[in-house]
Structure formats: structure tokens, C-alpha cells
Figure 1: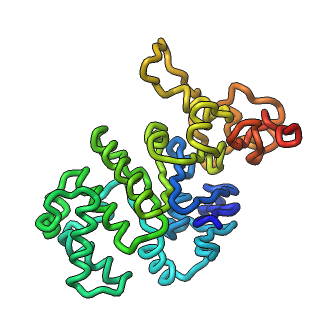
Figure 2: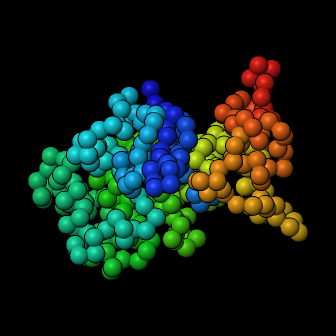
Figure 3: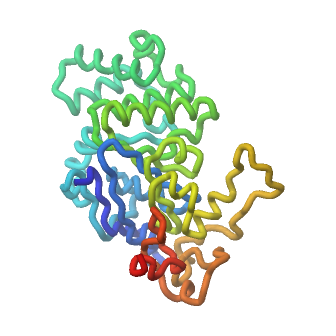
Length: 325
């Protein structure tokens, strides 16, 4: 059984001028110890999908359809307090800006030990000991001394390590990491990526890694879901998708990345921009930007289908592949 299963997720934003559909029929699963990368341009719906899973959708956003199951138990319809307990204990979260996760008025010690005490049966002394162990595990030097510092006394990379320690406080089975390396410089990014990979391996924690950076996905994830305009355009093993992308959008993303050792005069680009939620075209949402669009793409919306390769893509180019084997 998958640790996390998202089935036909639909997220809406009701407004004065009608309801905007932000996530449209998204389905995927994550196994224990697996890293699923979720990638796409800004506005693709990556962060909203993550927020739906951890129960932190900003009003008036709401889950309007589908199901989210953790260990086979549905969690998308739970009362707030019940979801809050799950959010700390079974699901951890790492956000892009560590300062949004850390209270500047409290020491790191207070924030870690409070979280541990809420979710685990420990004394204050035991909680402090565990907090120091966690800081040590995520690579904070002299953790026993730094634990009494305030967030502003840490660098950006060290603050992100503290946030990862905070996410791990109650040994969660799943971590939703939303752009965890974006605000960091490249050398620190590499350290955080290595840390996330090691924690997955050591703790068997599953990770949903949300990012717009295909390089981070290539380094970290086992599988990747490429999102476009609130839907999954392609999903498959990272190596397969990177080496042999099937969806025209994924091909465009891959073609826009410079490759070391390959001299090219001009990088490929995807013309146009992601459509606004109130301007998503009929048929395939990518049709205005797609070099391979046919008449069918402008009238019918494709679901994920077999491509003849290892990934599945929502593209009419592969219609009939499953039948043809």
C-alpha cells in the first residue's frame, strides 16, 4: 500500500466573478522512503497541491473533489484540530523561506522542544536532548551550544537546516518540502539536497519535493510529476523523463536546460506563458504553446496515458499506445 495516495484532487477558489479551478483531477502516490519531485512553472499548481495535502490551503481555497489518503486513511475531510495533530506527527513541512517557519521571538531550543513535547511522550529534559540530536543530525555545528540561539543568529542555510530538524521532530512518515533550496546559494543547495536524500534513506521518510528547478529534481527525486495549469502533464521515473521526455511541455523544459559539455548556440525556449486560471483554454491547456498541437488538442482534454516509454503523459500524441503495447 502507498504511504500517500492522491486521487482525482480538485481545488477551487470561489470568488465574486465565479469559481476558479486551480487543481484539476490530479492523482499520484508516494511510497515509503521515496522522493517524488513535483516540477513546473510558477502557477502550475505545485504548491497548492502540497498545501492541500498538509491541510494548509489559504481561504477561500478549498478541496472541492477527490481524496487524499495517508496510510489508507482519508485526511482531506478531517476537522482542523485532528488535521493539526497529523500535520506535526505524521506529516512534516519544509518551506522556501525558513523565517516563515521559525518564530523570531523564541530560541531554537524553545521551538524544537515545544514541537517534540506536543507530539511525543517525553519530559522537557528528554525533549531538549532529542532537539540537540536532531540539530546535530542536520549538520548544525556545536548543536548543544547553538540550540539556545535565536533564528536571526543563523545564516540562511543553517536556518533551513533548523527547519528540517523541526520537520523531523516527531519522526513523520511524509515530508512536504516546498522549494526548500530556492533562497539558498548553489553550494548550500547541494548540501541541503544531500541532507534530504540521506534523511530519506536513514528514516525511510517519504518526501514530496516541490520545485521549479529540474536540476534539483534530477539530483534528489526517484520519480517526477511535471505539472502544467493545475494538471499533471507527465509522470515517471526521473531518469526516464529526463532522458526521454514524452510530453511536449516536458521536452521544452528539458531543452531549456544547459548541459555541461554540450555546446549549443541557443537554448530551446517555450513560447508564451502559463495561462491564468480564468483563461485556461478548452482541450489541452498547453495547446497555445505546443509545437505538436492538432485539431483534437483544441477540443478534447487528454488524461495521462501510456507513451510506449516508461512514463505516462497527458498528450494525444500517444493515444492508442496502451492498446498497441
